[in-house]
Image (tube, rainbow, N blue to C red; front, side, top):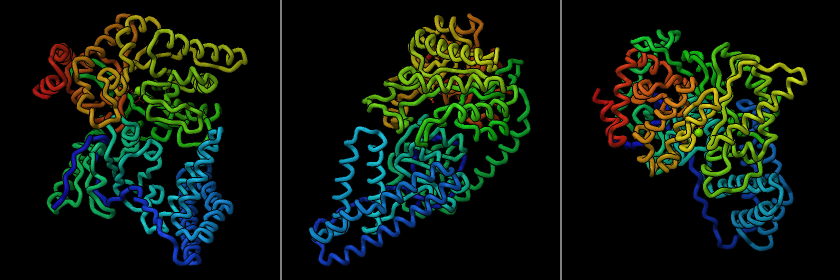
Length: 569
Ligand code: PEP
Ligand code: MG
């Protein structure tokens, strides 16, 4: 009998493959004394040797897939593994205190971790995590338990984990990882967003997938419906093969409109743009016929590394994106760190509510040099294409004015040095905090454009954490509360002659498109894989009819009523 699990459909597509379970092994430390110390020394030696070989392999693989600098992390791990100070203390405990190798290793590691964790320097504190990691690896060999590592995957698999961090997701190799599914997470968690840009079918928030599978079982991930089937029957395999075939056919069909403009049946043009996380995503953006980039999440340039990217490195990344998009508009968002996106190398204090804390523009004001460096890189790159800069998490007019002022100061400095900057650069902001949406009239006098970030706007309006699947029932894009805020933002902007886009995940949802078109949205930015289905849908919509539907939706009693109404049309 196959096992069916329901989760949140996160990234389109259907995948079949064997399960690769990323699960930390349970580790039980034996407390009974060692019978034979020399035997324990030998076990320790062997476990260290196997761990060393594994780390060498991971290092070689990482060098190939992610480059020299990422591979250096594992050189550091190898140094720790072979550190005579650490290893010597473990050997001593085995010899003199008659401990089994596991216990000796555990105790010595705890001592080292405590010392490193109490050091003032952030870098040294991070080394504590390295020591813990390495010790876990050696322990797993001593105890004979398996240790998962996604970097070692070299065959087609479905990755199954309790959770994946954005940097875990960034390291998944598309060639081998055919799909993934997790116990926790929501549709707008950043690992979900990255899965969409990698175009890996994914289902998150299944609650218990990790306890329902074993390594090597066959699994199907249906990222369209949010279903995971473990150990499928012959009939289910056949059924999904047909679905996969139908999907491929419809994708081929959609290629016919790849170069068409997005115009409704009554002649209204809207812009369909793509969300990206790095220049590497551009191939998909162009092959899916995007009319621009509506959101470049620059924070991914800062993540998964050991130090801040230099101005030059950033300039190169922004320039590539602008050049490759030719004269199409590219909205680059300034750094949005905080929430579920961390930078371990910055000394950021722990926060009880990181999504409500020093995130995005707030962090940029606290670390102004980081912000100014990014702005210089953006301004220098602006002459290579059609750049629009946008600030995230703006709550007050003063924040917008301050961010714009800093940008203009950097522009002046560059111009004084004779460095060219685009004259047509637009400066806008994300509307993702309810206060900004409510005050859209006042904001519209200051900005060149708005881009509505529904991922955050919904979580802050409904007070429902976008990462928490237990409250995902409150995460309601179709609530008239959200639709009213969107309507208000668009009306206020249009009154001032400003345009409005949306770069939250809602902009790519089939049910939302007629509503947003009806509310007057000018630009829709989504994952590249959603663009052609969205264009196909738009070509068949009539904007005046959608306006009437949107007006009706605003008067309904709740999200369910709106969804039901839209589906009944
Ligand atoms: C949003 O909040 O809708 C958004 C697009 O930004 P992010 O998902 O990166 O927070
Ligand atoms: Mg946001």
